[in-house]
Image (cartoon, rainbow over all chains, first blue to last red; front, side, top):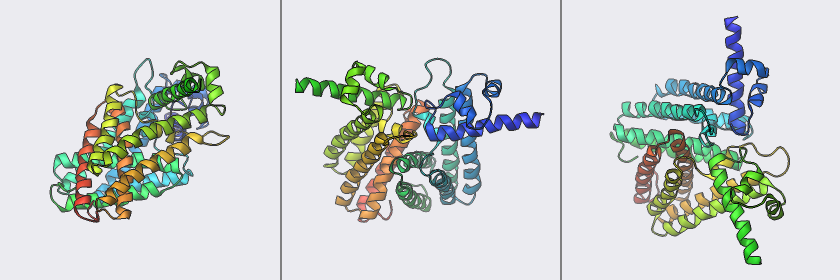
Length: 200
Length: 200
């Protein structure tokens, strides 16, 4: 029973993350978020009593953790390997969806928080961005970049990858992601080669 | 009369751009887009017979042109001056709105295009991104960066600035924009100093 409840709940979260990365949060009702995973509306409110914000926050954290797991694993081989894995995830999302899907974390970050109650989804987005930045900054530090430059460069990586996914969707073209990939690789290579990253 | 009609129409476009940069397009009805500028709904359909997509596309182009005008003027003093002006615009948007407003171009880029009819708003977003990239790439080329590196770097600048505005909103903190600003300045200085930008 616990297994099955865990599975249904998880299925709703996965479905919600997929709909949010395609359509955004404002464009999706709780009913649609639930229907996307095939779950009945009643069970959605049972699992997520605070409604749309709670479900969206969990969907954002789920997507964030999925990326963090890959990022952490690939960063073990160095920051360029981590960058490549990070970009490969987004390339797959954009191409497999025929430019219809992007990042659910960005989607909730650019919408108005609810007029009443806690902005659970946007708070989750902030936490996910910080988690990705910390993983990247830690790896850059381990490879000789000083801490302030590593933190700045980590923000640049997350920001440019998020922005380029949106540009790819608008243009229905993967070129913006290729541009960013090439530049970021050069930048990381220079920063780690020069012990201190003052040239990155 | 022509003057007054031009003014009312323009007022609706300006209001729509403001609501879209706060709330996104899916979260705004045509009625709300019109009400935000104080215009009656009838006149909105009079000026924008194709409805929400047409109005949103014009709002995106209006916002894009406003940024392009500043960017073009400031790039005359070089790519770093242009970057600073570009970032200053976004810093003002984010801080003056108390982290409630971002970029209307990004907002429409991350939403689902309409199920039927032309995706006018997202097409406008693609054109605006390309216009900004061309202005930045042109300036980088004039300052000694070879054409492919200039194009890649221009995409990196637009993507990272768009991404960082979203990160600032989510975190309710201007730090991500400061991080990106510092790194991009170093990157542009290195690229233009080295005739060819192979190190940027």
